[in-house]
Amino acid sequence: MGAYLSHGAFSTPTEAKKFTISFWFKRSELGAVNYLLGAYDGSSTNSSDFVFGTGDNLALYFGGNAGSGYLLQTNRVFRDVNAWYHFVYEVDTTQATDSNRVKVYINGVQETSFSTEQYPPQNATTFIFNSANNKIGQQWDASTAAYSWDGSMTHFHFIDGTAYDASSFGETDATTGIWKPKTAPSVTYGTNGFFLKFENSGSLGTDSSGNGNNFTVNGTPTQTVDTPSNVFATLNPLNVPTSNGPTFANGNTTSTTNTTLGTYQFGGTSTLGVTKGKWYIEAKATIDVTYSRNILLITGEATTFARTNSTSLSNSTITYASEGGEVRKNSSLEYTGSTYNTGDIIQIALDLDNGYVYFGKNNTWQNSGVPTSGATGTGGVSTIAISSTTDGAYFFGQGDNTGGTALSKFDFNFGNGYFGTTAVASGNADDNGLGIFEYAPPTGYYALCTKNINAQEYS
Image 1 (tube, rainbow, N blue to C red):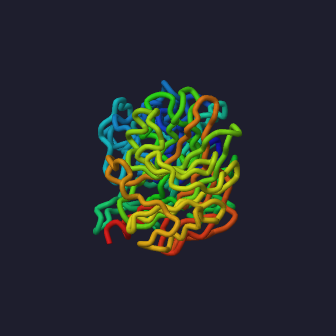
Image 2 (image 1 turned 90 degrees about the horizontal axis):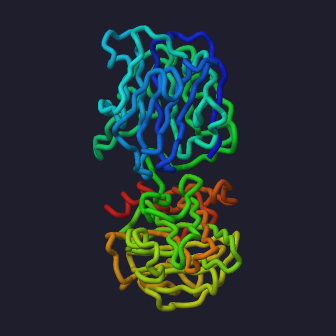
């Protein structure tokens, strides 16, 4: 959060009355102000912002800052943190009908339901990505840096001089029926146009349109392998208590439990759950208090913990605790492994085909575990007879059994290649070539992402 791309004034545009913006985004922080982009040419009447508000609606300001100028604000809310959304903003102010001057598309479908609907006058001159100072991921006003974009973004196109609809940038997959990107759309970018793929981790502001309209990177954004074509798990901010829940950061891959309540603090569960197959994740522990009882877990009752925030994390779970190194199932001790502390990397290998889960610490499997042992389950804990799987699937999660001033904090790596904002030291992929892990996943185990789920769950 706080990272953004910037570009000063562009050249004279090809056509100041027509342009198109297209990009894909994935949200992380909900119920908060998050700016997708901002532009400002020095006059308060000539600023534009695309911003999510606290109600998770999308507001699109065309000239003028908040409360002035022209505005489209959606009735639709955007709260699916597991989904990539495709956004297209088509502008042609030469149109006689006001609603044809600005069109908005979400996942290929034109948005027509707005709580506020104010269109610019005919033949109005635009300034975004031409005369203005422009930012992607932040408002034009630097004093609002706290509201910077907290999420992911990819394939950002700006078209100068032509109004394209969504079909120029995306299409419906014939097999799945899902809207997907056209990775090399046939468009004319115009003088000020650009195409930011974000594919070069060392130069995320590189323009791939051929125009050389490169952006300056500000702050320390991180590159993710999570894409509209293959979504990786994160932690789920929708499955939390209504009050005193955990705090999420770094694209919902870092969770810190709340200290307000007593014991059994809930720290969140993965956005993706599984019912069969073999799965591998990593999590780096950060223990804020010496005797905090960090816990990683497998559960089939994620929503129960989120609703109560007080149900014992040893019930309906298999847990691995930092203090004492205890591995428990339904409160009963299975074995005592190694304790772990700040900086230790914990591995979880979940084998739902044979019904076992294995825990590792810094590439040593606990209890002499052998994740590849199959039906014998050597060193693993049987997932059979976890008290309940009311959610219909198993989820990875986190919590603590201490509460009070003790915090449980983990940086999860579901395959994105980062612990927090730090890249993994190694680059190990699963057998499908997916994911970036610190340690090599056991043979036959896979990163928790939609491509792997489709391959394993529906094979």
